[in-house]
Image: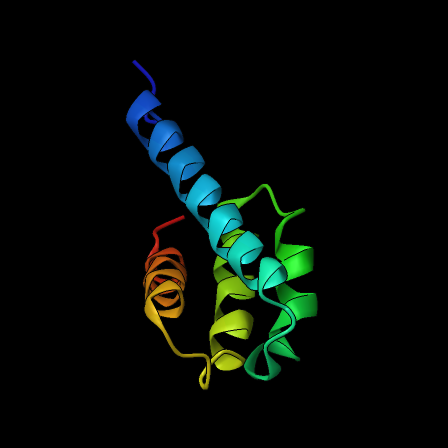
Length: 90
């Protein structure tokens, strides 16, 4: 028996969080015309290329720091996903 921290459940959970992270990043890229997302755009665009949860956590913090003034339902949903990713366990 192995003591690996990567069980099937952990891998599936990580993949789901990465997928949600990519969706959140895409939301920002798709709304790049909004002034509140000027700085977040490049962080989000790079976030679309990230495949590891540890990297996504750091990138989520950078993005969160740059979407403070973005408002609306999509902004709330995106912010919630990014906060969840930032708190994720590696």
